[in-house]
Image (tube, rainbow, N blue to C red; front, side, top):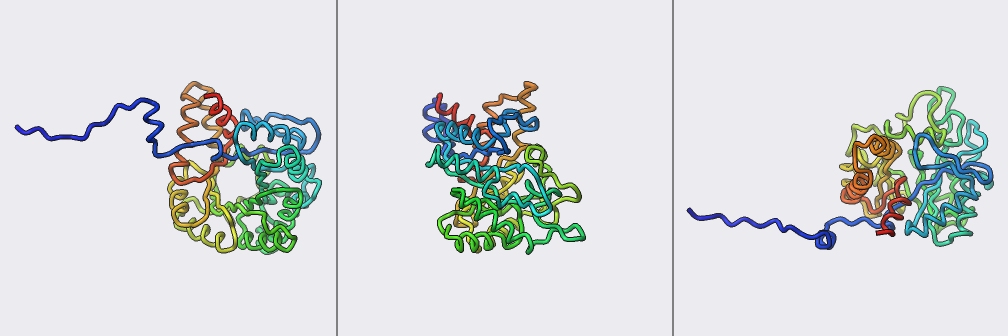
Amino acid sequence: MELIERPRRLRRSQTMRDLVAETDLRARDLVQPLFVVPGQGVRRPIAALPGQEHLSPDEAAREAEKIYRAGVPAILLFGIPPEKDALGSWAARLDAPVQDATRRIKQAVPELLVIADTCLCEYTDHGHCGVLRPDGMVDNDETLPLLAAAAVSQAEAGADVIAPSDMMDGRVAALREGLDAAGFTQTAILSYAVKYRSAFYGPFREAAGSAPQHGDRSGYQMDYRNGREALREASLDVSEGADMLLVKPGMPYMDVLSSVARSVGVPVGAYQVSVEYAMLEAAAERGWLDRDQVVQESLIGLKRAGARFIVTYYAHEWARRALAR
């Protein structure tokens, strides 16, 4: 009987496996989110996001230095204002927490890329991402100039990248026009082009105080049953001037991430959102998984699916571990 020759699976050493691995993860692929609050010397743990903190602008600058020294090239700033109103007025103020933190960070670590989240949900008393009409629906067109004003204020403070996360129609074009008119032609736009109405945002909304006070965001965020729609949204934002795109959430939408990354000619990132982080932390606390291995695997999965960069609460920690190896 003739034996059939079969290709052998080589039993490779760790060094060999690292050498030939198809997907690699480096600190420079990661972006660390930070939550900035008013005050001085504030470092307040966020209960819904174990290991994460609310930071005053001075503490955010100190944290940014540590993040950059660990090899992470960028941070994403979210702001919680001292007070809120129907129009989210603090989003465009030069003395808002994000703007204050940005100035301090750029002075302390000029090489660190500062990305400013641009949305009204953290700043409005109703928790929606735009101006509300009398019937309770978000007024898309009335919201655009407020977002543009916030973007210009953030750029004036020194933000390198403006990241609209509101999902209003036409907001990328409005921000690009506003930034250019104010002389910030080199300020890049990272658009949350594919942001789903998801239940995976709960801990973030607690951290940012941005949960809608009534209704939901189904009128402007994407339906999680839709995949092809993501390609249309991504294409529209690129045509309006987006320099980079973000898919959010990450893990449940890796198919979408892969499709979008293949379909557009700009870098596409993924956001490993708050529930993804909180689930891993809760399971690790109960001893149900190997925390470091699962964090690594989850990040590699997003990278393998097509993410050029990953926004993750694990960025600083992962980079520190990588330096120590």
